[in-house]
Length: 120
Image 1: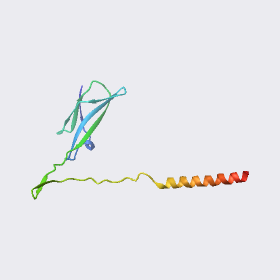
Image 2 (image 1 turned 30 degrees about the vertical axis):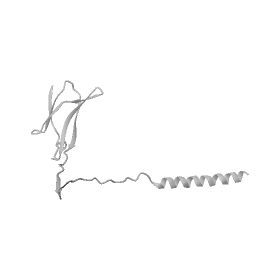
Image 3 (image 1 turned 135 degrees about the horizontal axis):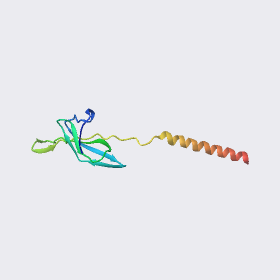
Image 4 (image 1 turned 180 degrees about the horizontal axis):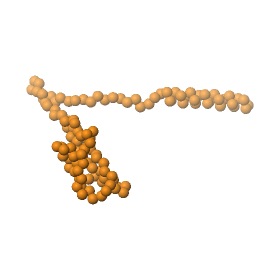
């Protein structure tokens, strides 16, 4: 059976710098298959063939088109423009937990010393 469905408005690609590929996933008896899908840009519809009554989902994958790097010539030297990404360092820990544990350790040691003194 050949099925054609209209792509919902929120799934239509509106970014000219991104290429979107659509797929149809079929879930039947606990098994998921990706079906061969054809996208019609004029009607914003997907067409696929199936032989089962199952659950279907629209999937898509976006790929950004790379911007062309144009070399510029300065003093007979070729210089390529590069875009550097900003690297952010992530704080991986918080010292408050360690300080709290150290205070707990010291206070428990004091308690152990006073309990032993009372026993003797």
